[in-house]
Length: 475
Ligand code: URA
Image 1: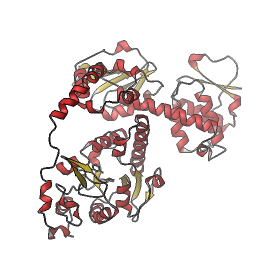
Image 2 (image 1 turned 30 degrees about the horizontal axis):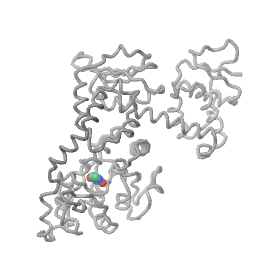
Image 3 (image 1 turned 135 degrees about the vertical axis):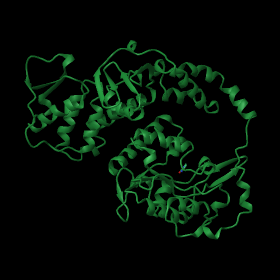
Image 4 (image 1 turned 90 degrees about the vertical axis):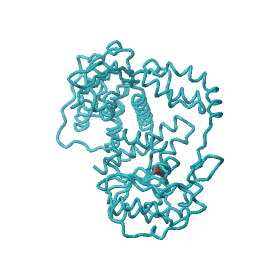
């Protein structure tokens, strides 16, 4: 029996190196016993042999999952993962066998880790420690369910690059001083101040985004479980906000303001503009002006303005949405409303910088149905999408992206000219005529419309995973 003692439980590099050695030496899973140094190694048994030349090739997806699942607290994880890679080395299709007990266990463990990562991203709250050498210093205490510090720290590095911070958990800590992420031993809650001045900002923010007309207490509990409340400054406001919700809704009703677009009336008098068919645009600015004058289909009649794409001409990735929404129509910029907020957060999580992308839509005018004082979004028809491809093609010709990410079915139709389902295209990279790569994913507003919070969280993770795939593909 080989005995492998893991000095740092949850450390993928250590486990992978031991597992590779065993695999290359043909050691069967039943001949290995795995334990961590804290559990105390036995005095007997042979140590794991170093890897021989000719390491065994494994599916990349499996290694990516293993890197997450090794963080699971279940002490059986190193052994189970080894059994799975042992089997995968002999059965290339193992991961596709959804009813296999090992694969089922792996997927569930992975889901638990991804959920834990999502919660840590959302619920870490930094407390200000002071200033040193001109840089602000912050610290946060967090108790994740699993050993996920290394999985989550890069997210905080991207998000809070400009400040120095440490995140302390019971298992390990991540430290950022502006250059490299460093990891250290776990700590205790009393290392981090319980409150600070930033706390008021969190509370104000939470109070501002709390929508009394949409209170769903069960969904709130599922999304923000009580065990995290003790570290969340805004948690103390939940009860008073809930108690005052009804009265606030009443006040909102009384104070209801017109949401109608004052410019909507112009559609009765507006006439087609001959210049709109101008074919000679050679710059993005010129294109934006031409799009605003477009009369190629009747959608221009009711919209405030045509909304062109936005971003650098040198962008390597183009994101295509459906059509401008209410806010986009008023502001004349794509993805600045609620769907844009969801998109911005997902982009950030995926490590994509919005300012380096070209964001546009399949259809350039807002299509809506007036309902009282409001304008309700309507899906564009296939005909409208096909007519508007005129502009999308011009944007594509000027930007010449290496990769296009389509958000939703209308965008997919706009880019490909075909009515394929997202499901049939998702999860793989495709190639368009001319060599541009294509990744098809959902529209961010789909996440806003999902009533089931748990499913929405899963869908959101899959959406972020698609964006990460896009980043890697374009790199
Ligand atoms: N939805 C889209 O598809 N595009 C936008 O610009 C805004 C919302």
